[in-house]
Image 1 (cartoon, helix red, strand yellow):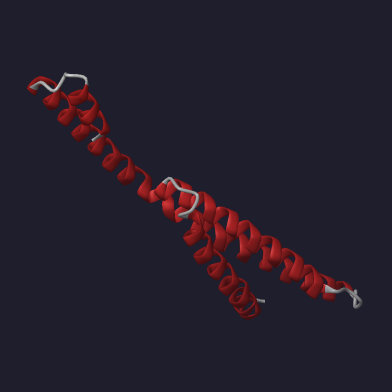
Image 2: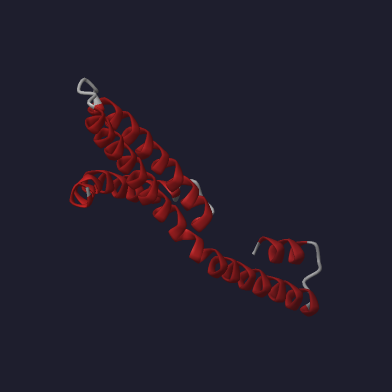
Length: 137
């Protein structure tokens, strides 16, 4: 719209110029649409990454605890390590959400929506991953 107003103001409001602006606008909108369609599959990658991060962290901590139990080490504070690793995983998921928002909607502000969803997913995964591991071990 800015280009159209400026073109008319400087006296170049000919039919050919307006047609050129309309073609430019149409091509710009088509490129934006194609870009959004091309980026759409990449939106799910941060969600899988968040679940994998939390699940592998909890799995590693669980296997470490079981190995130490077999080895006979009794005085080992696993709860502190679990809290540290879970907290760092949740912070990492928050940052992954910011990146997902930047990828999907080209805005860092949109990333807060993805960050909130990813933090909730990370909390749920950290809560349920030990239950699944308990059945496997």
